[in-house]
Length: 376
Ligand SMILES: *Cc1c(COP(=O)(O)O)cnc(C)c1O
Image 1 (cartoon, protein in one colour):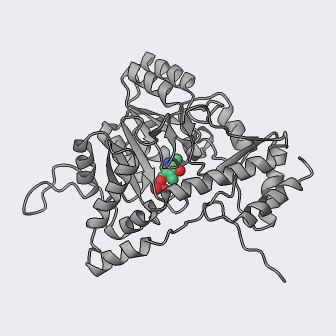
Image 2 (cartoon, rainbow, N blue to C red; image 1 turned 30 degrees about the horizontal axis):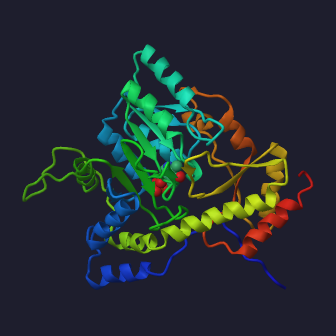
């Protein structure tokens, strides 16, 4: 009997050179935290992002968000405005800092933070003597958010923007790399992201001074002294030289990875757009998405669920879109500014298999199953 292999949503895809860099780390015994791969990976990222921003590689994207909030000065009792339609890791570090998240719903064109609701929220909080300390906006699924509008509002009220670009390495906004569009940006190299170091992340900043401060905090905040001297609380958040070696190998193939993910999107769209019940997320003019995950929006919960279960029965992994943070039990007491858009996406949307290592046969299998659905 012919058994079909499982198709994953987004699995790691090595390029070939990763092992060379990891071996170099072994050969030179640069196993211990820092070393040439860390510098090399940071430099590769810096060049890829356009050469004007500083990059510090860290143990995870979550760690990068946490350090960024620390560097912005978010502390106990502060409020931070955060996109509701996202993965929980965007919001959790707000709680680590003893601050309170306030969630902002999405707009329909990019599914990301609504500039209108952002401004309404800022005005409301200022009126109540709770001026927000920071804004966390997210390029979800690789689609850039409306950076011009959001940055203008943020600037007008003097609130820094932290750009969660964990899903958007390779995306650009009017030719500028996502991650470099605001005060500080964050990347993730978790196993399911467009490139991976098995686990890792990065903080992007315009200022060398902030990069150095991030490195200081991420390596236990040791003051300059012959003994261990500490005048601030540190973290163990730096990326290791071994994992940075994987990152260097992955950077050699990043362009191919973006191309492959975009080509997945085009394949799905070409083969499914005749069905009126399925909608795709289009790129507005000037927006370039890495298409990390191809998402569809169906016209009913019933259709979405039947597609998801049909695929599951064929050993194909798909997933609902992110459940908005304002609907998560853990954040139920938090204030939110909503318009129903992210809730609707959660109820009716589906993430399709999107790995850069999917074959045309894999993609055809997915299409065939979707096309057979009687609810379409
Ligand atoms: C993956 C992800 C993170 C967290 O990154 P990790 O490296 O897994 O800690 C943060 N925000 C978003 C939107 C993500 O998708």
